[in-house]
Image 1 (cartoon, rainbow, N blue to C red):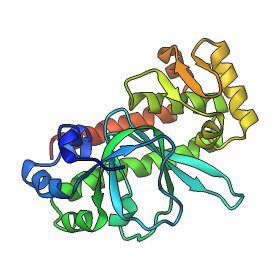
Image 2: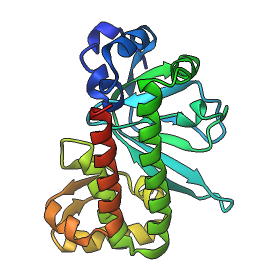
Image 3: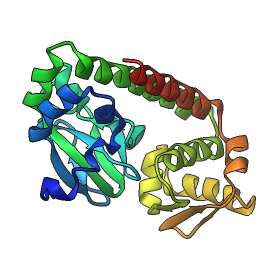
Length: 245
């Protein structure tokens, strides 16, 4: 859903990638940036969809990136808030999306037509550098998630995922249907129910199958696997590098 830019002109630069751009490049892109509402569970790209835009999330908005297996299982491989963008494969040579991008926590953002993004990216200036820096962080998150899904317990992975989500929003409440949580962790409903129940009994969260509330972040940090801290440190390095571009 799109709406007049006048309603969101102050919000577009809530996205850290856009905020990092020099004013001349931002002003060049501004006429092409389309403010947009991102409703809950909206699929921005399904598997193999043509990539038409880069999507930049604003604060308190979370977009999941999911991969698909031959066994017809969807598994989250990355999470994106206002520190990033989705659709990046489109500027790196892919015409179609290798992933599904799903709005996990609804909010707002902006989108840039992929041809405009390619044009600016080809100049090898700040826009190019900002996107490549973020892509490096994204690739680490994807590879770390693959490792995490292989070697860590459901409780450790759930704590990691909750912390990554909480880092991107300013509330302790997450709209989280059980089926969506199963996708996020790549587990069946029984598996995620057991993991959520374990954290709930320990007083870290409450969960009713539709909404999850974080009660004790410090305990979650103690339970989460090291993958959370690895991804968080890398994101911090990328954020710092953007400030010195």
